[in-house]
Image 1: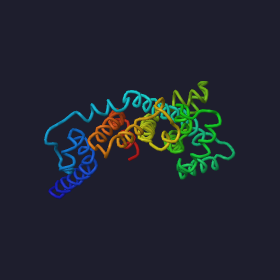
Image 2: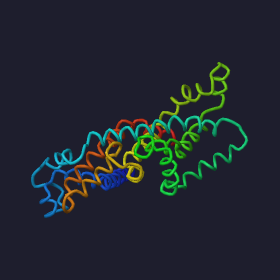
Image 3: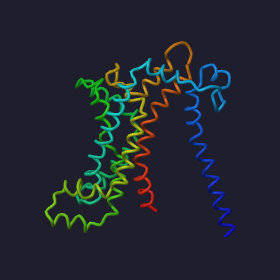
Image 4: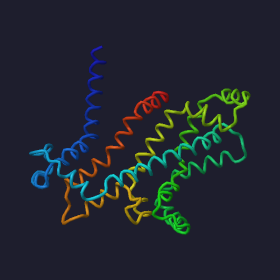
Length: 272
C-alpha cells in the first residue's frame, strides 16, 4: 500500500511538472501583457509586473479593429469545422461500412493526403481561386479546407466499432443512407466529432499562412495577421502590446476547448 501511495505521489508530481511546463509560458505571457514596456526591458523574465497596467489592451483596440478581425476569424474557423464535419461523416461511412470497388485505394488516397502539407499545394490552389476571382473572400479562406483527410480517418475508425446490424436494422425500417449517417450515426460519434471540431477550430483559428496568402485588406483579414501587424507598428517591438494581442487571440480557442472538454474525455475513455 505504501508503494502504491508513493507511486501515486510521484505520478502527481510528474503531472504537475508537465502542467507547469505547458502553462508556464502562457501565464508568463498573460502577466507580461499587464506590464509596462519599461518593466519588460528592465526585467524580461520577472514573473510579476511591478504594477498592473491595462494600457496594452487599450492600445490593441486603438491600433486595430479587433472586433472585425475576431469576427472574421470566428466565421472562418467555425465554417471550416462545420463543413469538415458535414463531409467527413458520409466519407468515413462509405470507407467503413459500404462495399465498393476501389475502397482500399480510396482509403490509401486519404492516408496519403495526410502526408501533404498545405504549403506544397498553395500555388495551384491560389491560381485556381484567383482565376474565379475569389481572392480576398471568405470563400477562399474556407473552401480549400472543407475536405479533411484526418477527419475522414477519425470517423472511419470510429465507425468500425459500430456493429453493422445497427445499420441493417435502420435500413429495414426504411431509413435512407443520409438519415443513417446524419441522424443515427452522428450522435453516436459525438466524442469523435467534438475532437475533430476542436482540432480543426484551433488549427484554423491560429492559421497565419493561408490568410496571409489569400487576403489583401481588412475586409476578411484574421486575428493572427493583426497580431503580426502589432509587432511591426512603431519603432522597435512593443512586447507588452504583442502579448496583449496574443492573449486576446488565444482566449476564444481556450473557451472552445473548455466547452468540448467533456466530449474529449469521453473519447479518450472510450478508446481505453
